[in-house]
Image 1: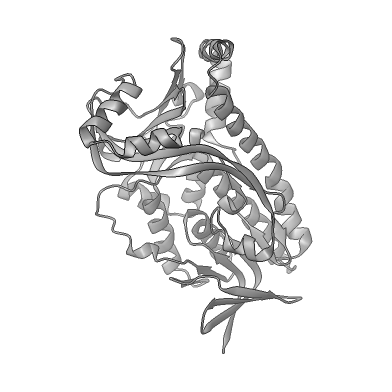
Image 2: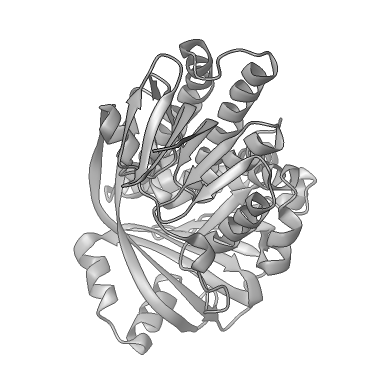
Length: 395
């Protein structure tokens, strides 16, 4: 069996894994990208993708650096110029405007299939990246200077570094024996695409309800992508409603801010959990994205955290590559872990804290919550800080 050699092999060709492959390949690092499916077979003409990401300006700048943003824009992106947050208890609300921070937008909502398609098309034209579609990681063997990787019954490749970008149920993490911890929120997030009666005004709307937040994200073509978090039983009940009943419940939950809704396509739901790994790497292996951290979706930061992982890992690998050093040494991988672990844990703690704060029903906590929104809304300085944070770290 012949074994093709690469410097980096990446398991998982979604947004995070493909972005890392692009960054490394552009810097002259040879890459193998493996994916269990075939993202190129996704029908781009059929409806709208239920999986969307609210990309910060930091993430957008990454895609501009990779020269895929123009293609993404052509396929369809939607700017977020304002953010409106309000609570079911009390009348206070918080309105953030990107213009107050001197920006045209604080982020963009993009269907995941658009981002992945643009990245894969770029990789197809790269001389430094080979793509292995419909290829699962079946096993590996770590040697002193490389990893032998079985990607199919009759295929084997080798790489100096093996990267796991294969999601919260990461096969590489499991095979590597890297521990992970967390808890189930006993909630599900319902996702759907709807057409609102009123224009969305390029605004991200979020209302905190007793069981969880309802987010209405502006989408291309004047549509709305919803992420509606509730207790598992409640969400499963919503899934059984007729289209008319569901749209009525959605309008009521959003206090008719956008009028009536028309459901486009199907609804779906996924369970919510907090999960994190204490170790980011092992011998010649490293994890990025959801393989090391899964957060509550109430602020839409999951994809952005993963893309920050991509930037940090690429920086340390490319630096080692250019200096002729071992790109998979523990020194290199630990440097990546030090850069990302603190930020990831902080964001996870903030998201978990918000979930618990806005999910509490005690009268005092409700009053504090509502008063806090009002106080922040009255402070230009605090609102500007929140806006800057929502845009992502600047480099």
